[in-house]
Amino acid sequence: MTSSRENNRIIVFDTTLRDGEQSPGASMNLEEKLRIAELLEEMGVDVIEAGFPIASEGDFEAVHEVAKIVKESVVCGLSRATKGDIERCFEAIKPAPRRRIHTFLSTSPLHMKYKLQMDPEDVLQKVIESVTFARSLTDDVEWSAEDGSRTEHDFLCRCVEGAINAGAATINIPDTVGYAVPGEFAGLIEMLFNRVPNIDKAIISVHCHNDLGLAVANSLAAVGAGARQVECTINGLGERAGNAAMEEIIMALRTRQDVMPFETSIKSEYITRASRLVSTITGFTVQPNKAIVGANAFAHESGIHQDGVLKHAGTYEIMTPESVGLHKSNLVLGKHSGRHAFREKIKELGYHLGDNAIEDAFKRFKDLADKKKEVFDEDIEALVDDEVVRSNNRIALKSLEIVCGTREPSAKMALVIDGEEKSCEAIGDGPVDAAFHAIRKLFPNEAKLQLYQVHAVTGGTDAQAEVTVRLEEDGKTVNGQGADTDTMVASVKAYVNALNKLLVKREKSAPEALSA
Ligand code: KIV
Ligand code: ZN
Image 1 (tube, rainbow, N blue to C red):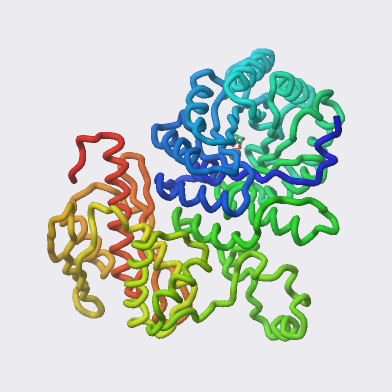
Image 2: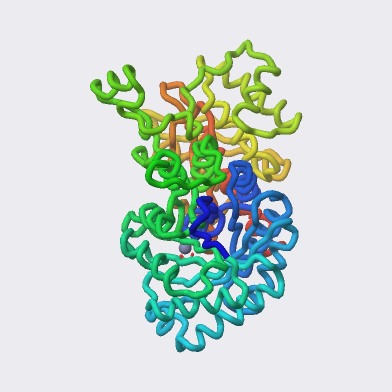
């Protein structure tokens, strides 16, 4: 059998919906997870880890629904090493034409002693039993040695050999706490290839966390040593400092083919869209100087650089903005543009909307074009995303008047709640505070505001504001979004959107608690 190392194709395993969602505050609802899964599939991700089905009903449902819509990518669910977890995981992924159970167990001395309180021999036995059981349900099984980078080599070799013999086709070596450094991590992978006798029967995967800022470097070093699957997330979202960022891995491989001659199936032109979608949904803004997807990643500010780029882009640009799907801000349409041009633009931006949704978005575009002189691609994206966010809501903003400046800030607001219009006035420490008080008067709730964030979609004082509001109630967090040329309207829409999401969560956990 030829070694998997001889193949130069790297399998991209995205865990934005599982490890990414584990970041505190990054919770996503079902509809949002489905939108992300659709985009991941479209951009060519090989394996989508859609969640941890045993963790909650919501997680199970999300994996199950993703499994129903994804056709090309493998849909994967995570499970601990117990029968109940693995069965639940299999139930969740069952509808997918291509499905994988990913089961894991800690193997480092620290984790075995304190977390598992198990002897190494019992751990090894459990690895073999869990993989064997998972294989009785499906052919595609991945096994992970949690805290693999801090595991003793002899023991890691025995666990990997045992898992492969039990039928795992993919062996994942996580750097769970982001402790490894590139040379050492590459050495670990190399060591497995040299010492595990049946290693050629499996694909070696890596899963790196970014606690020391080395997740991408470690992943690439491991690829150099023979790993052929990388686990990553969009924008590097994930527990603590996050996971390896998919966009950085993809563009590093694409840009440095001379030293890393590997292929992936990712269409890199989707990177900007995916980054924007994940950041809008989670409210985790991307830092301006973030590699590949930061707002400044392709901006040339200094005169010397600008001059160089104008003479030859290659002087300061190692990859083109177009290769990550970043186009020059196009002045798209004006207020005289018709439906046909609008429909074409929506398609070009990668949205697949039905006729009714296009019609609604078109009306909102006309309103926007009346208010705003220039409408850019980013405006259209914000407008369509906002439209999607607001469908099927129980609470909606009807009208808003704000007084602010040197007078006492106040808000006069009308909301439609379950079809009934209610209005009130409220004061506050500022216009946002007054508006949020008004919402709480009309719809009393104890949810705590954890984040209020405003972002301008484009430049200029007439730019649309995109607002994120994060609310927390009984340990559950939701992120609401709103976009409008009026920052206060966008703020209220975002708060109301977050409340609508909380209501859905309440309905799921206690169907009788439907009202405020
Ligand atoms: O970081 C980690 O070890 C994990 C495993 C469950 C793969 O996320
Ligand atoms: Zn992880």
